[in-house]
Length: 559
Image (cartoon, rainbow, N blue to C red; front, top):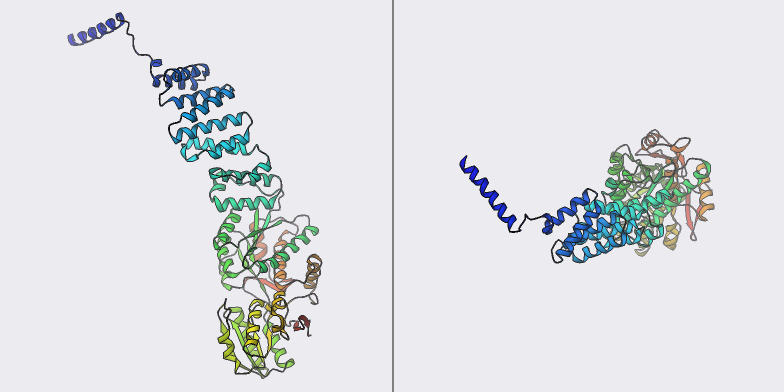
């Protein structure tokens, strides 16, 4: 007890001596840290005048202190709080100039941007934020920067957004604002394409910041996914012409028709994945027409199934597509008697006693070759040789030499027009002078454009045409020629039928993806521009095909 009393008396004595000597206790105002704490507390409590006083004292008393930049930053925030914009801007500029690290510079620029927004200078604010490194901010500051850039972009005119693409960390917000503007203005196609670009460049952006409703009506849109540039674009344009004709005609006949929006998947296989994921996550997309080839369709198929997005490919032939699930479909054009019709003509009309076959190693080509061979032999003629080649081949020397010395009266080529115009010249080069016979795959403008004299006299079936007795085919051909001033191709007809099958779900109702899928699943046989067709692996054979011959560079009916 005695020791405690002595200690207290000693402390009191020391205090009295200091007081007598004029040395009071150290105050908060006497240190840089103390002034900083006082200024920050004053600002937090809303006492802006006191905050400014303490920050000014610190700047005046300690001009070389490392905290100088943060004091100027505090002054800037205080001035901004009472709408003294010019003084706030000067203080923020001083903070930027004296910042000792990248974080300090970024925070100062963030304040400068905010000051510009408060004054209505949205372009200036955007330019400051574009030059700022967002990575140098902490999480809260970074969120503030995002709020500022989105606010500023929402206040500038459309011409600025399109003329000044975002750079660095701001690019995604330029695209998001463009997508929102296009959607609000009813420009569905541009909104969807911009959304696709966002999904490609910034896969998580829509999940984090949301996706606008890009449809101004309740109809939704159908995506046309084709290689519209580069390899395959020529064939895709033919499909596209038929699809767009179907949508255009429907828009004139029905009140409720969705839009058709084209997406180019020509870059590489990854673009198909990006496109399908983007379309799948966009509830406005109700269906997909495409892709063009079996290989690309097999890339898209699992994603269509994943997103429950109905997909119909108009031209892919792989039966493996039928195994992916309910939402994956392919248009199957009935061609069961295609090769049989040609075989009958070759034997009965052309008088061929011996025939050879060169086919591609695909299920369709092999099936046609086998049917042709069977019918030829049933009719009493002979198949003297049958040779196959791998898909993508361009040199057929070995196959041609294998049949050359058998001297066949005719050669059957169950291939598409592209392979036909490469095979025909090589047959002539190796002195095979036999008459050529093909399948409906030859029914393409390219046959005459590039086949020239080498396909002269060739006979093949066509599954549709302006002279067809099928009313749907004749109607399609009429409207196609009126719209495009050219004869339709088989691919155009396939595109038209695919679109018409989907549009059939809009007759009197506006479907969801599930109701559209129900419509597709319950469809049996469809009678369209291509004749009888189905979805999936079931094909309905035809009883007869119109046959044509190439005569003096023109296709002439021989029936």
